[in-house]
Length: 246
Image 1 (cartoon, rainbow, N blue to C red):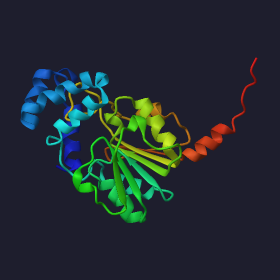
Image 2 (cartoon, rainbow, N blue to C red):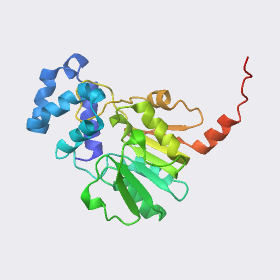
Image 3 (tube, rainbow, N blue to C red):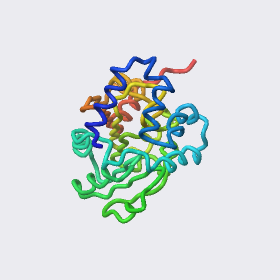
Image 4 (tube, rainbow, N blue to C red):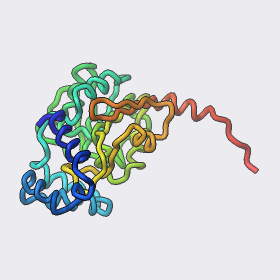
């Protein structure tokens, strides 16, 4: 199923079904059974358990449910892909939450540069991708020094993380020039057809997370885009006068 179709389905569930029904375990279990069969309980229990899972337990959910996720090249809309690829700057790029590798391959092909993809699980068929290297890693503890990559990209990943503030801090830490983030526009409900823990229904939802007036915020189809020139933000911040201590 492509993203445009699932967007329409999610919009109907999130906007036309009353919340008292939308959050009903009885009502939603019917749909979860049809979509996920015997593994429906993993989806239905995930939001309640996720904050207390170890990193290994957290990753195990994704491994167990790998065959139940919607199989498509990318979760991004095509317009969002174009904006992300066009926003790349510099010669080194990190894609955090590289998934099935669609975006890293697109960046490498169009810019002719080497790209690093990192995720909690890396499909075996991606390991020999030209111009791209993959490694297993955690967004909350990225295995790279400060300012390692000219551009850091993170698309359809922040909605999944356990610690949102720490994840954002890590993205900024390893970015030298630019940070590009895309998240899906989605209302929060107890039961959703994904493993999302954080929800961003409006551009203001992103502003609350990133708290940067010097960044670009945009709505593209059913995605929210954030672009921050971290080098300029750091330069502006370092130029602020400090108040004298008492």
